[in-house]
Length: 263
Image 1 (tube, rainbow, N blue to C red):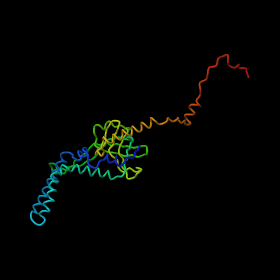
Image 2 (tube, rainbow, N blue to C red):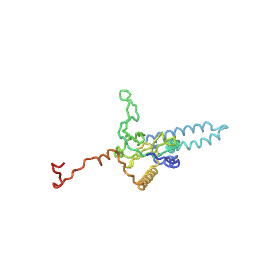
Image 3 (tube, one colour):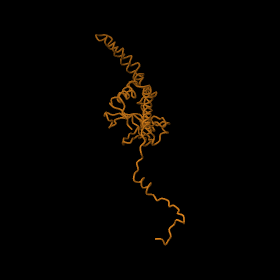
Image 4 (tube, one colour):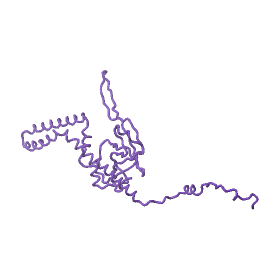
């Protein structure tokens, strides 16, 4: 099932400004924070050198004013950088003109070991040693009745163990075509039976998406409730089984049986 969404609802689901979950995603771990701090320190040192170089001269006032604001930005780069990264990633999704709520089925679930990076070091004998960093990831294949299929691969988490083949999977489908005939990108997956999200980057406002899911469920239920019952159609096999099957013979009393010599 693929239900087109209005542009407003699409923008509610993927806001322009990064959400708290998206900011947390780009905040990263300690090495990521340390890298941003080093960038801030390097940028700050460079700006101070520029200010010192133009301490005198005709451009003194202009350079001092510009570098003042740049220094402030450099000081807090490590803090605001995740928000900018999340906003840029959201903008990449919002460039698609159309979106739809797609409800499909989990066709396959499997786990793989993926290479996520390498590290080079030198051992005691001076030999170069390359260490591969691998990560277990879950692969979820989702499809619908139209033949559409997509696969999402994310880091494996404990709650992913509850996902089963045949579970209902819901996601946001993005397209540049009004009829959503060609899906260009999909969001994270929500497995409603167990309430589990399958995602690496949290594209969606999850509370809003679950609200859309409940509204569609309510509409479907009301349509089913008020729909006039259809008369069942009989195919040929059902007709033969109902009318052509051999019927049990009735026991006839002896008095009503025919005489053997009777013509």
